[in-house]
Length: 406
View 1 (cartoon, rainbow, N blue to C red):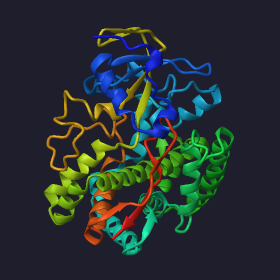
View 2 (cartoon, rainbow, N blue to C red):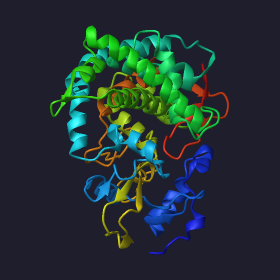
View 3 (cartoon, one colour):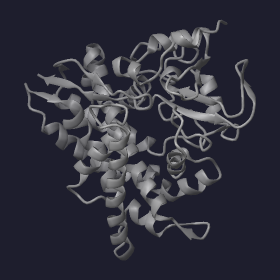
View 4 (spheres, one colour):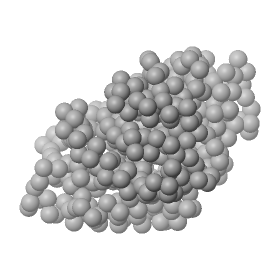
């Protein structure tokens, strides 16, 4: 196995703005699956881990590969930013992570998702009904963004009519590397301050008038005898708002792009909209094909070796789910969109271990409901212009997707 020179691989945000770098990942899996990647601008480099088996191994050993030591983001964080990220579930290690996750996990159980499914299907049908036959829509904002933000806001307890505020705050916070979505770090920080103030107002109201929603649960919850602090509630609120709409929005948009690019697959699904077994496997294939998160960074807690590569304590290890989901050792014909693929051991929701996505069941329900309804009403559609990708080394998203409906 060779070692690829660091300068020949670029997995940072400018690359993702242009394309998903599948050619680079294919080369890395074959030649250098634990690859040292430099980062300009005074940031420490990292090991890019691209094989499915290695990503699962790293994800399932949080004692050796910590999230809390250096956050889940590639670039080094200022001390105050790191402290804030440690208040987010994604930025915690066990046992703290397990205690805090339990606070909101009751809102995402299979029973809760089944209860929500009818409402989600109704929302999906209402959304698709707004698409004019023979018309063109910008799919990301007009359709894909609306279902997940409406669902998560309802679950959290955001007042009806404020979903647009949450959508805009999410864009500015998660899109900090993309000038079309955010004015940069200062604007992302301002969006965070605005959503914190909004959350504080809702919290004050829930203290005196509790409801059956996730925010009420957070306001009145205790961890080891202590109530959550205002900062902890704010960070929970932000995580749920951003992760609950940003990730599924991207999955929906990229699924529509994939079906526009694979008309035979689209026709097969359109002919089988009442085939539950087909749609179960199709949903998993959509998740494998275009997961909404590129990667997750950990930090080694001690010296170790991964696939023969020495890693020192304190060095960054970045696991690339996008690469794992095309790993030739796991998937037959990984570059074929196969909606009947089974088994399908994709890592769209993480590599297992404690940070497996809390909203996996919710995302599956939303994807299945919206794409299925779309093909019931509009079995044929096509791109009406060139898609534009989000400039981000973390979020795998589209910011512009014009689609024409026949």
